[in-house]
Image (cartoon, rainbow, N blue to C red; front, side, top):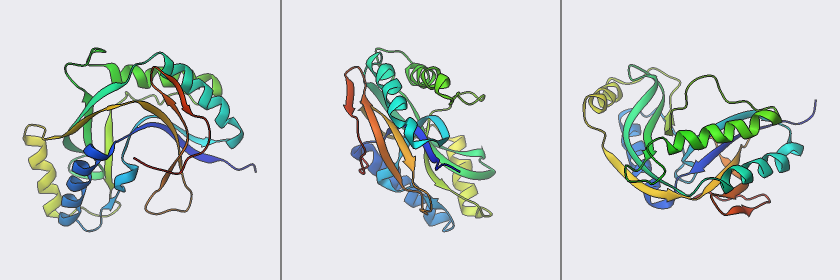
Length: 210
């Protein structure tokens, strides 16, 4: 069987807000040591999950992302709040919320529109979008064991309180990212990126995070 890569399209979180998000994750881990934190350099907002990807198709995917990026301006984002999938009482994925800044010229649904544009561009290449509605978030940690009472209390308190601001930035790059096999915790490597409203930034492989 030909090799397949596990890939996704995302916006990486920059260094400044990544610090606040990583601190939140560290605080959660203190209340539940079984949490598996996402590394600070790997924090991101997933726009489109491709899954099994033929490495030979990466150039075509990159070209499609360049077309999308050329039609969308850089996106001001704000990170705030804490939640969990599937529910705060049965947490398996802990996340921070993300949304376009209220004064962004593109409007409140700019992030969802960008995700939808990526989905439309990649569908003809065999990677249609998921059926469920887009929910912008940054995964902070994963849990495959029973949550501690302290963690459940933290999630319940976050659910009942106003969303805590966690930083803001303007993101400029769409990235096709490889989830490297056999790496735990997960490690992500950028395969190609496209600059929003400015065409491609890089066309080759990269090995850096934010």
